[in-house]
Length: 162
Image 1: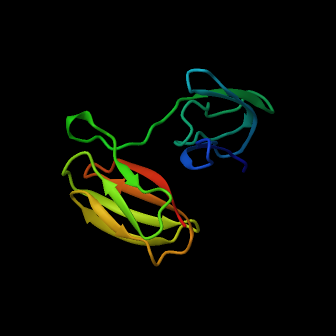
Image 2: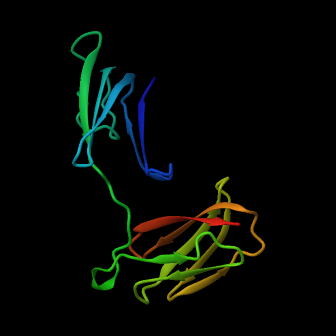
């Protein structure tokens, strides 16, 4: 079977979100059209005899050899819902050489993880306030810092270590 995989990245190429459009048979994504409201129209064709729970709206049966689809993919944001509605958190300096300072909007407990460019986890710990991370022993390159709150909502930022 073939599925269509749509990946949302920012202007720097950092992963934001993804969506698989597919069912039990063949799907072919032909065109993506970004709209000014942040949504994207996806056009393609499919033939199927099974509906996939990951692709709501695909009919259970094809009405011929191939059918067409159009899906409107909405912008999906990822962030931390913090106390008082403040969702900002900061990492500085960026780029860094020996330490990173993380500033959180409140004293809510967060899970902090750090992954290197290859996806390996370097650090995982619980933090409840501003945090300093020693990065002096890290290899030069890009790292992803992710914080996750108690409800499972998370936000990530990229940092560079020189």
